Image 1 (spheres, helix red, strand yellow):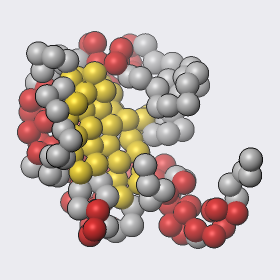
Image 2: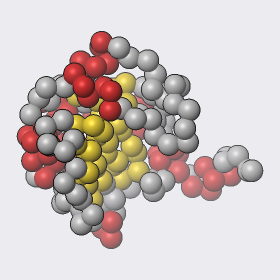
Image 3: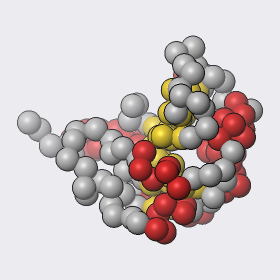
Image 4: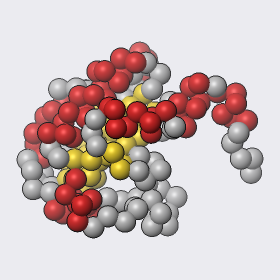
Amino acid sequence: MAIWQYLLIVVPEKSIQNDYQCIFKNNKTKFLPQTKSFWKVYDKDVSSIISGIDQIIKRADWSSETLLSWKGNTTNEEDNDCSISINKDKTRIKEFQFRVDLRKESNLINFLIPILKICEMNKLVLIDLKGEIHKPKIEDIITSIKASNATAFLNDPIAFLKGLPSS
């Protein structure tokens, strides 16, 4: 993950209402927490989500049948990406996340906002790296974006790097 990318994990809104405990506080690994259990209650059309993302961003070369990946044009500062893990029969999502490149405003307009619309249409919510839940509306996640490490780095890279713990 590049420092200028802002990551959001996507889960069904219904799963958050039913049984939500902070997945980050309960995560005992050094990796992102798994959200597979949150998708068990999701019964919407998975293919419409996938085709919607296909309209926004190019499918990556390394994408497979069950791990779908999309990647933006990195040479044009469009280091946006998205990944969805699905089951073998392609009817259930197991994991869904995306990262937006904060270096250019056009990434927010051309990538983030359309992804948020897909999430809104499919009753999905977003979880940031601090474990905060956000509705899929730009005004609901803007505070999180502003408080992110990506924004801190882009605003003042030297200060950000000096503030990292040395170990």
